[in-house]
Image 1 (tube, rainbow, N blue to C red):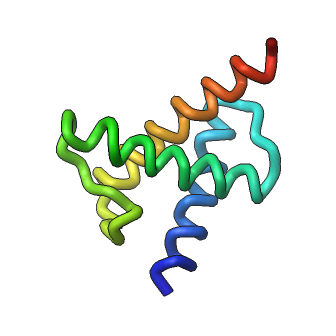
Image 2 (image 1 turned 45 degrees about the vertical axis):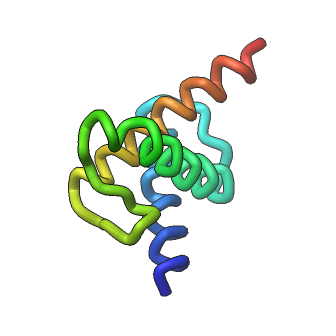
Amino acid sequence: MNLIILLIVGGLIGWVASMLVGGGGGILMNVVVGIVGALLAGFLLNPLIGGGNILSGDLSLSAIAVSLLGSIILLAILNLVRRR
């Protein structure tokens, strides 16, 4: 059940990130960007900010915000790589 919630929340986070940054690539791409962005944010930003992590099952507002920030950063990097 936790995996299904992770996929749904990751997809929503990826979709919101693609709406903010642009360059979304469909449902599967949104899920991948949302989950990978959450993973990167969990490893890189949580020690600095101290927010939660949706990958560990924490669905607090701070965990979702950190995951969204990670997804936005990841999507911005992907857009820069695609343009070249």
